[in-house]
Length: 292
Image (tube, rainbow, N blue to C red):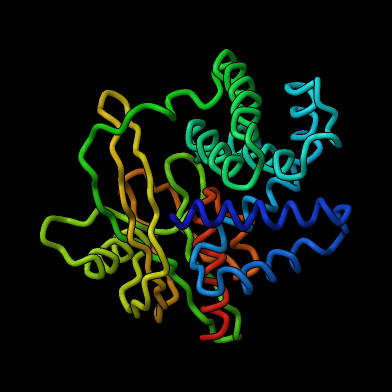
């Protein structure tokens, strides 16, 4: 089972349990943490499951209105618990998660419905999500995300750069990219270049930091790059934890599409980051950093 499919399974299990018990306030964390511990204690993609679960609950009122609109013959409380919560997760990914291609959201939801629901669950979920996606296409939402990937895969390396300052505070260096979103520093691995060497070079070029301790690999980002007039291509980004010993940032000028770079307080990072996958990595990294 892939990491993302397992993450969706854990999110479904937790959402189903929370729904079954009447959506008690303050219980969502407890339910999810128990399911991680009981069913996937060594799971390394908890951030995706948390973001999916919490995002779904945050948008629950809007999501339930969509279910009622697109399955009018089935009152919400008469849809089976599994089907209802598979739809909730699927609609969140389909409508509100910007980095998930629509066909991925629909296909994953159908697989969950078939695995945990009844004989007709897959067909029911497919019908509702397919109808929602048809309207999305008419409105031009998520255009181009289901195009086939034809280009050659490229590889990059980057890192979560952090520093403990003299006053005891922990800060993380983020860059502002060409899309106006804050994220972690990363760049292309040159031919015959070691990923760790690439990380040090890129961070030196983008942030001006040279005294670096490259720690463990914290994960990988899987991206599909779409640029004008070229075929879409997949990119894998190896991400490392990196402790900076020097403190002065010197943001590069005219390097790629980077616009700025700043130190942000440890507690601010989750709210500042502009991409779901970056937030998932931060969920994995933050406890390691605080305990270092």
